[in-house]
Length: 95
Image 1 (tube, rainbow, N blue to C red):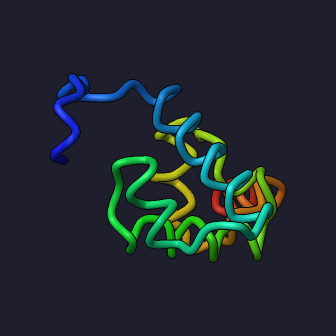
Image 2: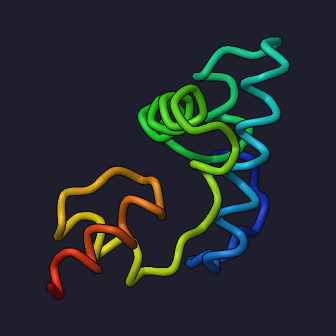
């Protein structure tokens, strides 16, 4: 970015969640394009597009940080983002 503003090399999980939730607010306001939101937050337009999709499907909850084990188990088991579905799949998997 050409704005000469210092930015950390790595964001914490909490900071990344905060950025996604800020994008959610901007997307819902509908005043900026996804490209403008991407520039404003210092991310790629593809990231904002992914976030918009999750926001449409799951609401703000879909943009909240999840424990990495939950994400890994969900992907491994091929279940939805619904944590109850994950719990049922894990339980059934142990039977």
